Length: 310
Image (cartoon, rainbow, N blue to C red; front, top):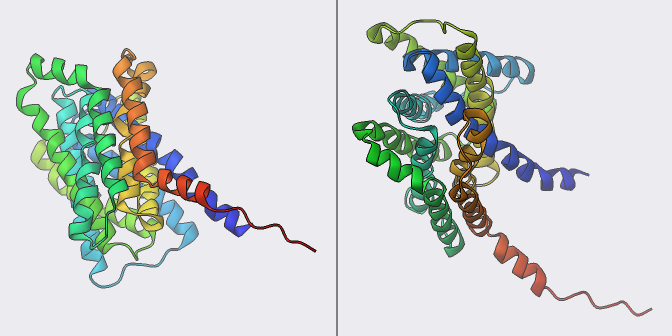
């Protein structure tokens, strides 16, 4: 019974992780249409901290010790403040949600390639090929939109999601390297509280409103706080612990295509051939990167047991 549960844990968590992470671009775009970026960040962190605080009250995870507090704070600055302040600023300045997810989709390739250099983890050929294939799928998803956007002249605003992508890369590697032994709930709640303190201190300098002004704004930050912050990051840290950065990177390859598909009913964007084709390529990249091809071949080559003669 236990082995069956363990066998299904990672696949189920992986299936949940992709749409939850992808939803952040959709909800982020909606939120920045209703309020300023500091307000979005403030309530994202408030709601996420409350949600994870409720979980912590029930589960009572162990507190960080010694330098773990510092490592969690650094991770918060990279994964939370750095990534989302940059991404939301880009969204608020006209960068489409799809293009933002395309640029953030380059992070898995960087994470995968930097993992053996920074984490002393051996990276075989399958993850490299998988990550490259996934990156090709990422590009195909929104190739038309990328050309139209650049032609439309959004200019320097595209720099913001690039900075967000670099923060996501650095934060993922840092989380894996220094926060591996910290309980997942503890890791998320400390990061959210750290980010909340930093945002509250910075709010007066931006002159942004402290509260969303309408139902749409509250709904968007509510989703970001509960599902995209508390939920998605808890799954991410858990998957990093159960598997590796390569596993999470392979899943992140699916985010741009998933975002494009979700944007059809939610944002009214047209479903393109590129989105469907890119999703297929990204799926192949994930399949190769996770070593499933090799495992399948190994199972097929295993000889059947000799019949026992009695």
